[in-house]
Length: 362
Ligand SMILES: NC(=O)c1ccc[n+]([C@@H]2O[C@H](COP(=O)([O-])OP(=O)(O)OC[C@H]3O[C@@H](n4cnc5c(N)ncnc54)[C@H](O)[C@@H]3O)[C@@H](O)[C@H]2O)c1
Image (cartoon, rainbow, N blue to C red; front, side, top):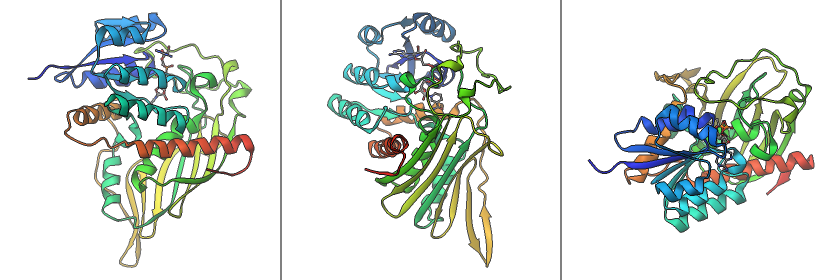
């Protein structure tokens, strides 16, 4: 057996404790999580002790220097992915970075350029693609059930579901609200299915009408608070949007309608994404279904696959396993630079349109 690859993790909050570290540990025949870093040393220490990790640091640069990792997971807030990712690449590590890769497409391009210079892989853990049932939807899509795609819709509507464990609600840390958080997963999956499709224009609007009212409804508690230390949530800090809506035009005659909310007075909570084409349609989330016609009838094809994960954030386990196989040269990375930059360019236009209050073109 070859030597185990050394994994280090930067950012020791929710997603590190719940997803990245368990995902890497599930591959412990091949990798070892050797160190964690967090600007908050207490959190880094607690995380190291919870998972039995030998070393912890408050300075990720010192960690890179001391432990010389082969792989780094970057799990800091959205505004702080770039520096640790580039520093890790320059230190000779392959990087699995949380989504969205950067705060905009320009920053994403800088990060990929750094990966190219270093000759290392930069992989964005777009876990939406690795969710239960998505592989079946992609296989059916690739078989041609949809024909030529021309419209996609994604509605990820939480009536009350602002992430309240970290800094998601603080612009300086996370840039924007649900379009930037959950919308990115859906847009990424759509672009993966239809193939890179440069954006022509977007009309977007970002509202912040509910959360700023400071209403404290009974919401689901942070289910995992026994496995990390949530930052106390202060409604008065909330300065991002709580609802993002957009209409997006892409090349190849394709349009996307997107609704992403953390808080919206809507009839029900939904998480539905589908693509419509000339021959049929395909639902990707919440579960794969082909919408087509046969024998003069409208017909739904429902593949018999598992649509619920058995362990929390299992998508991260699949991501880490895929990244490891790609590092070993056993498969190509499925989350490509072109797709990631395509999605970031769409997001750029959505928020530019919101600021200007009219549709904007690239
Ligand atoms: N794929 C998913 O399903 C999913 C789910 C949740 C979060 N995320 C992503 O994960 C990232 C982190 O989210 P989270 O929920 O874990 O947030 P969090 O606030 O719980 O954790 C972030 C941690 O990073 C630390 N940090 C901040 N700046 C740092 C720096 N420069 N160096 C080292 N540590 C630093 C903070 O102190 C904090 O402990 C975000 O990009 C988010 O979008 C993805």
